[in-house]
Image 1 (spheres, rainbow, N blue to C red):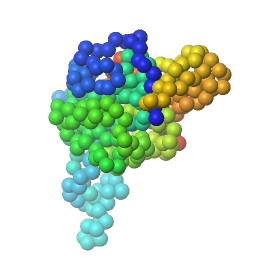
Image 2 (cartoon, rainbow, N blue to C red):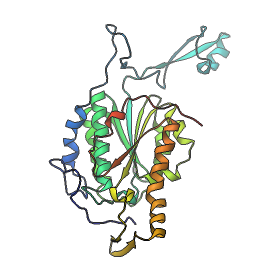
Image 3 (spheres, rainbow, N blue to C red):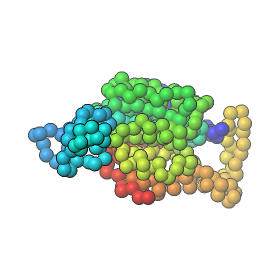
Image 4 (cartoon, helix red, strand yellow):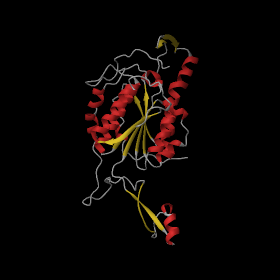
Length: 316
């Protein structure tokens, strides 16, 4: 069960319309649209322009369109073997280009996120970051979906525009108001994401740093090879720099006291909170993943410049 400590009002002031910092409100998630709109929209290519402007076509897609005779330079991986066998001439498959990219938000709902000491809980910051990802997707003309690790709840169906964003905001509000009872873990959520994503999608992962410790290393380069992957690590100021003092905590009806002035206790604290964050910040960029440590009391939009930035090359 997650430990909780009463929140203090030190740090950044809550935005207008924000709740009590313990649970996200739909009003504050909707209001974040203004912050997302400050980010320039993705440029669309046209026959009037040259240079690196983004095309509205999102790659070749996965939907089969037709087959034609193979010509030199075609990708041999797309040969239509059945038609080739019937006709006696090599044929290749053509696929329908996707005009809307999918932005998929993966929400970690580990109990460790429902904790905070300044301004808001990490869970509230996760909801706010997810809302910003949804509004940025609207600005970029993407379809939007969200899922979490759960055995009984299906992902939110992809949709574009304000309707798609509001569906995602509703899920964020429900999931981060209190810990879901059927949380199956971030690993389960990423497995599901890998099955539904198509090449060229954008993946935004909201996670507690400790949740990443159970993710197989091979999963990250496999995702980054075909998608834009951004991982936001939700942290709390006290987790990373606890005072050397005896602190009271409560979890439900239970109360305990940790002596963080004790060297052994501080080493254990570091293993639980500090080391997982540092390991993720060092490791994920080498896997082609953009990563950002987002403190609960920080500006919720501080990570937005990562969207669209070229990732570091992945390594084995």
